[in-house]
Image 1 (cartoon, helix red, strand yellow):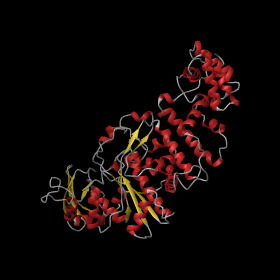
Image 2: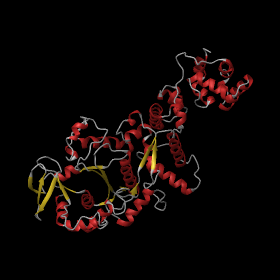
Image 3: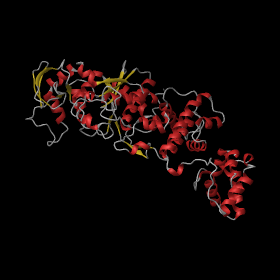
Image 4: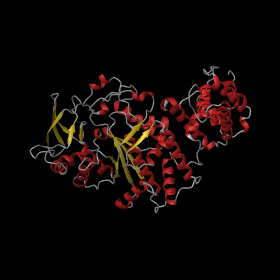
Length: 528
């Protein structure tokens, strides 16, 4: 890694962490979320943002611990619209998420279901954090000391929380502030009120269900810190040096600002280096299911349309504080083109406009890879052309690959993945006018007059010499037929597309004819 060239934001962030926190034996970088429903692509932005910084630190020879916290001891507040058996889930509102059953019937709990979904897919994009389960840690008494510090210092924490608030939103002096909440040991709900702290380990609480007890926070299973105190306590406990947050947490006087105060003043830990990441929009439809109520777009949806390295590229090529959209419409073609250009620049197959652009594009490409740099450049087949080849071959990717010249063995897997993504995109996401299928059942278009003559003459005059002509010459031959029939080229093309695919338009005709090949064209046009 050339430290002089900090062309990428991940390297700039890594450099800032080292500069501010010094040369350390271990750098802990953190991310996390509450598994209260499907972990969507907006949440993934945080995970990959941390992964990119982790890679940048490792590129500088640093030892890094990448932790991902599942906040599965948070309260289950509402039932998302896309969950099965909502009436069952309804009964578990106010329980810890980890105690809610998995109504999909696959995992031991609702929380675990959403955790498994993420943990199973992250390796596909080269991300392997160390997962921490907060329900386990709280129940094991891991944070008992941290909770005691908070309870002993609750007046000071109250001051930290009030410091950024206006008078209307301050916790009043007259109100007792408790930094913890309790899940009742009798009914499991958080419908509890903390009543007293004995300054040792005893916390007294009562519940709406009628239960009341004095719990020892070292052994009680249901006591946990509130979010704004839990976060800085864990920074201190894990020695976290870097953690980004969404713009909602990063708003002025928001949870990150108050967490910084609590971290410094109560736990004596310098808050982590951070940055704000922005929201992600979705353009187009990721598949047939996505119009269903409550459907959110997740990493599985992305990887059906984008190769893993291109999924990474979407994030590696965009600064985190920039809002952007992930597209499932025709923009997909452009995104593949952009990635291919970046790849050509990285491999020196296309010249960048200057050294700075080369360094940036090369680094974006490196960070987009699932693992190390591949042994060779990908097989550079444009996504649009691949879509045309696949549709011409009824989705038979192996037939398409067999027809391509000079595919190297180490390019094969990436090419297969691209073909799989392209076929999914065509069949599930692409606009209707982009889709086509060759006539192969002997059916005919309803053509007459000059349109029928045009199709016959393409068959009888252009086909026999087609293999000897390049695309340009073949186009000119077709245009010559139109001229001799006294019709516009457009009318000839329309007749040809109707005869071939039953549509008024399709891929560029000469290129399309070359893809179909003389034999198949003769079979389709023969009945005319």
